[in-house]
Image (cartoon, rainbow, N blue to C red):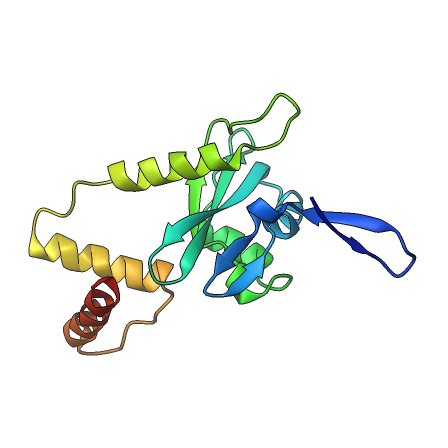
Length: 171
């Protein structure tokens, strides 16, 4: 466990070293964001895990159990957090779960959760069947996940440019 002393000299537990997320050299503990998320009216339980990324080291995924009858989206979560959390700490993905893996003492088993997220990512799709489907999928990822704004005109050129940049990163 990692802790900090406050001004009054009290020790406050801030997280566990192995739970720290390192996104492009910027490190943070998911507990800070999770505590804020527990105040969201649609969230019953939340856990943020780092998912391996070849360029940034890790990207973070919010694993959430919504309250009964509720649905939650990434956009809702980001809007809820953006005034209280630094941009690099905002979740980049949301995975909805019916239950999360817990230890007998009630702690989230993050290593199991990471494996489940990766399995979902791998099994999400066998890939687009046509070039048009691929272009639509790539456009969606660039706009929603990478948070790029599409141009007002010549979108095909914009998309080709970003796809060639992504190809360079993955090489």
